[in-house]
Image (cartoon, rainbow, N blue to C red; front, side, top):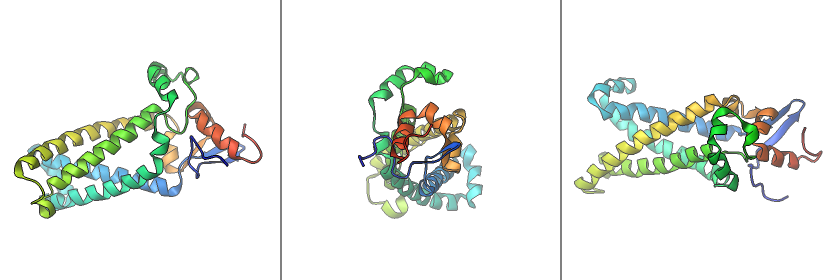
Length: 228
């Protein structure tokens, strides 16, 4: 069997009456939610140190000292969790020719005119943007975070470099908040998307409407021919 181009080995059509498609295995879903929860915790604890008016948020972690200690530890968990997900999903998030057309017709995307858009694999250009933006920003955050983690790496860099690392860390944090908001908005905006990360499956109609190349590839795997 040729190597899948638009799908993962665990993706499959589970039933045909009605058509139900497995989009994410349990491990990937758990990995996704660990990443999401740790990111939210980091955003809250990070905002608490961003400005004095937000310091009250440290109360959610048992006080300022606990929040200061937990923030970098949770950051390491986020990095490891996301990298596990990255290894599984990076190949399907590489750019494809149809992504250029999808971006050029962003007006049809916003209006929901799917019939005017090209057939897509498992991810569209918007989802790929989120994936690579998250990847870059999380790497920037972990590298800059290590530089300012004085408890364990106080002698790693000079004070001037640490100051630049603080600025870089803050800017990357603001950027990842915006990307995260975009990701959540898109998940709610495209009806049926949340089901993929809760139940692990989507309907055949959803797959055909939004990710037709992905569905066709899965249908081609079935020994009894494509599902209708």
